[in-house]
Image (cartoon, rainbow, N blue to C red):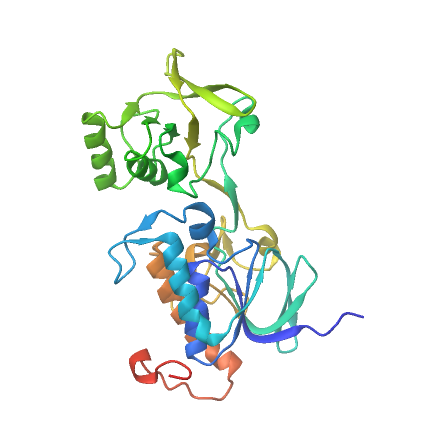
Length: 338
């Protein structure tokens, strides 16, 4: 016979920035949370993929590194004593008499009155370029993310891709790498216009080399140590770029995993929600952040923060039935114990 599950008011699936802020919003409405994430530490993609990458659109912070933002959100949620279940993916969500039972891969179960899905893009992994033998060089010469900028000091770096990640890291590493070469199949980049313009300025100054129009073709090296990246143009002509590191930024492959079988109204790899409440098609289940979609949706962290507040207010009557919600600003209400 299984042990009785732990209990909480709200189960939050996803410990990224939006999930962490949902803890705060629920806490302000006197709802306790358990937080689930397959990653071993809070922070979601911010912590796992680009902890040292600056973010510029967080109100009140002209610039803040992703890891610092996560630390601030954990600090902000800590007065409400959330319980974290990390390092194990959620494997099941079943309807129970007073809400739901969330089960994780390790077999632990938690009963909750309501559920907030803040799972970002779902489970994610890099889109690997189709290069023979690339596995041999992964984590020694080929990296799909930058955890520590300093790891690339004094090294010859090839960056492949034309989006924000490729351009942002080219700009960031230009000051510390021995050489930065950006490989892209066409002159136009898909990054923010100001970033693309800055990239071109650095190229004009000779601080970055734009290898255009080329695509990745092959790798050279031995014993897991990379020595060169071979690129080819559209006519098949090849060029050898002496390099210590390759950073291929071709986006992430995402997978909703068990979420896809939870009876939710899906649009591709996203969950349709009511934009006023973030309620999904399954009563008692809400979705916020990148995984949620509705007309006019903006995929911004600050949008996810607002969605966390809307979901918390919509959940309040489920957790506290019959109790009127007297909305107060945080400046009036304060925090527990303050």
